[in-house]
Length: 170
Image 1 (cartoon, rainbow, N blue to C red):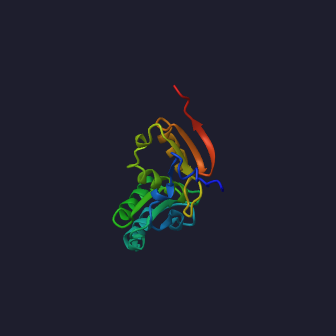
Image 2: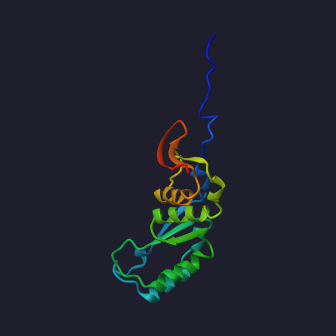
Image 3: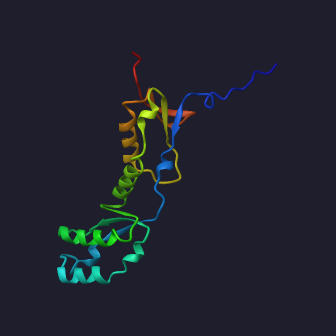
């Protein structure tokens, strides 16, 4: 008589968290202030205000925007404030920083409704393979938030995990 094959992963109490479920959908673009610098060095207020007034801000409609200045120049804070005011009327969201900073910010925002206490005393694995770009900061943040609650935390797939920590009994 053949032995019955049992799927131990399926019958395991392991809870898998897929960070892709928290991935905010939407196009990501970058707005680089260097394109508004006079001779690539300085931002002239009159010219910049004219740019802000005439630029087609609707091109950022519904998009997530990272705002940077990739040139080695000092850009006054008020210039970023003017950009923020315009993006606030059209963009889905924006941050000061590069595209990685934007992803980290978006994940932090999307996980505001994540309740780690729901995983109290449970073994949890954070899924490791994704089709979407998950920033390292998202893994760090979920680890920080889950650690006080879970029995154990692992990374990878339920059939092949890397242990992160296991709470000692008692």
